[in-house]
Length: 454
Ligand code: UDX
Ligand code: UDX
Image (cartoon, rainbow, N blue to C red; front, side, top):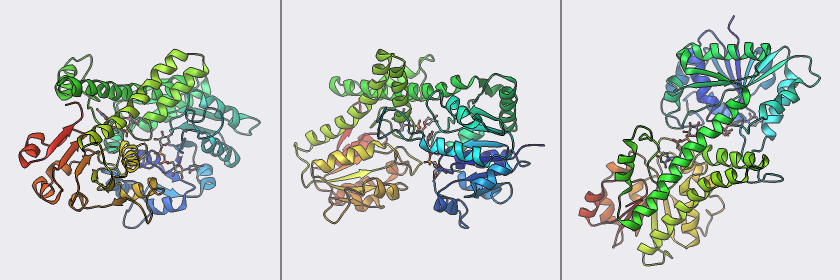
């Protein structure tokens, strides 16, 4: 009989992943549990106002919710009812103690492991879904199997989905990675998890490894992707200085099939919940093993990313006659990339804070991310605040001296830029950090146009 599945953590990872697993495994019951009651209530809401925005997610949830997919706060009941337990709780970067600023804070993971142990009524397979430092599974196994009545196999099944394309990434993954202990109990557990994915993923795309390889692969894959973004942004600065065009450079570089065209878009730098955290984890790991040069190498990827945001603000200040005080800047986009409302580590956040320090008046607009922007910027938004959040991009741009485009929402190129120009103070500037607008058309309207890497 196919085993039931529970996932602890109903976030960006747990929600979409379990929805797709339930859809593809109609004969299994899938329960998603979370300690956050309002989040579970949103997943269960009648009008499907789900707690996260992800294209295509609502359709999958509509298909399976109440059939074989359930959302609940009853962790105990779910652990008792299911033999396979995925854990997708958050693991933020530590803000205190040893490894602060680099290592992951594993307190939620550990608390979850302890409650699984407390509620277990038989042998269980525990599957790491959250990105975790290498060797976490070993620590968890020690906690779970220490004087326990039941046996636990701890596997690592890292998630490679990107926000905004999560459903497609889950339905047609490049690969699924399952790492586990290489003994009889571990290998049998790996096979159980392989079977879940094999109901829709071609078997040759399901790769199995030992548990540490799986954990490290996730960090390494994200570090390589982040490094590509930092590398192209480093080239972008040089393009601006020399008169080369980063899009031309990237196009020709990407035509070399050894390099490939993806992740060569210069811009405001990477954001999101994973890249920075995972690179920092890698830095910490290298340091812990005395690999100081390797640690510095990866740390450079993050420094380059922060530098990119500082450079954008410096260029804007220079173009605006060296002062932003009391000038209005309309920031188009607060999400860390298009098609998500997520703002974790968003470059827009860093840039807005720097603009605020310059005493600019800031109107932030975004089609999905303003509720998160309000939370992230709570310390800057108050009665005396110079910042306003404005859903309508036309209103945000009214009377502005500059539009600073930070997120590549598809909506932005199709706006009526003549109307925006007419409503702005002159000289009107557009700084398109994503190189997604029609530069020549904007110039013809009368805008002064800045781009990254040109
Ligand atoms: C993200 C990353 O993508 C992942 O790799 C990283 O390890 C954690 O952050 P995500 O699903 O986006 O994962 O996290 P988030 O949306 O914060 O969801 C985590 C959920 O776990 C929250 O809803 C939280 O309430 C829940 N949780 C946390 C529990 O149910 N129990 C706990 O003890 C702690
Ligand atoms: C990433 C990984 O892609 C995914 O496999 C992993 O599981 C989680 O982390 P995500 O953070 O959702 O996914 O977004 P991604 O599409 O990878 O973009 C990350 C950041 O890099 C964004 O801020 C994006 O705008 C930026 N980026 C990406 C660039 O600046 N240039 C590029 O060419 C590509």
